[in-house]
Image 1 (cartoon, rainbow, N blue to C red):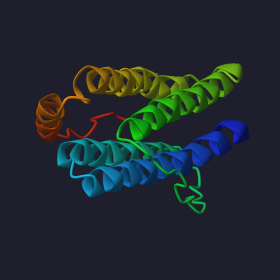
Image 2 (image 1 turned 45 degrees about the vertical axis):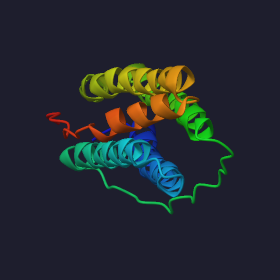
Image 3 (image 1 turned 60 degrees about the vertical axis):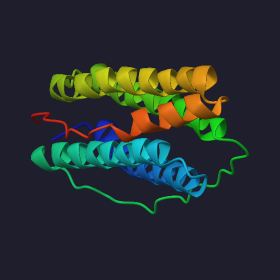
Image 4 (image 1 turned 180 degrees about the horizontal axis):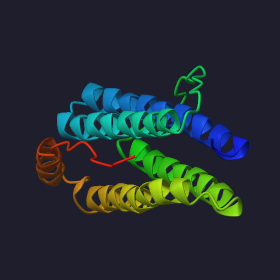
Amino acid sequence: MLNSRVRDLINTQINKEFYSAYLYLDFANYFYDEGLDGFAHWYDIQAQEERDHAMLMRTYLQNNGERVVFEAVDKPDKSYSSPEDPLHEGLKHEQYVTSLINTIYKAAQDVNDFRTMQCFDWFVKEQGEEEKNADDLIKKYKLFGHDPKGLYALNQELLGRVYTAPSLVL
């Protein structure tokens, strides 16, 4: 059995991951409405990643004999005045998620829960990649997004993103 605080933090994180998926679907909806289907596609894949993160954590709890508790998922409440807005919101959100993952890791470390720490090593690494991807997208938008041809090329590039499900062994 897991330490109750670690278990509760992971349960909470599962719900935060589902919220992340909702948030990214909201970003995708914005970009579809703006005619930027590549950006929308990029965030549709982000949403799938977040759902998979939640499912991995769910499996981890179940494999450790713990009950998974789902809570209501909050509705995203942001509004955007330019295509750059969701990009910045995405980076801020990934930084927030990193802090949550770090809290879980620290709680596991505090009780010498090496199994959870080993599992969450993957999520710590993943969050570094998530933050870098979000930051890179902002940089690309700043470089190319204000020029119609550059925006078109960037949008086309983002259409090429392919999703690969994680293969984490829990």
